[in-house]
Length: 141
Image (cartoon, rainbow, N blue to C red; front, side, top):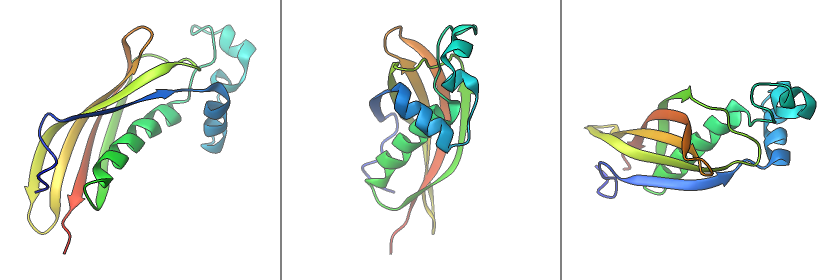
């Protein structure tokens, strides 16, 4: 087992969902929902403004998770699950935070690491997205 990976360890990063970048991400992901692109449509919605795409919010969470564990050696994701609790407005300042909840050595494979994560809107403290993950830190020869 990698001695640098500890139960209850926290890793986090701030991210701002810049409108132009978020719209570009949504288009590249094939998400053409007008809630991400049409200001008038979004203004008339229950959210009152443009919101970031769920494809981007989850990708940002997955990316932080992958980047964190890659610093310890070869790693691959096994599963992710997400629950959307609130919309993420364009230009929102957010904190993406993961905590290691389980570590399970698997002989001849590596170490399976489970995490719980959140994406929090910093201006209000509201959790907009919750997630869980499992990945494997691969054994190296």
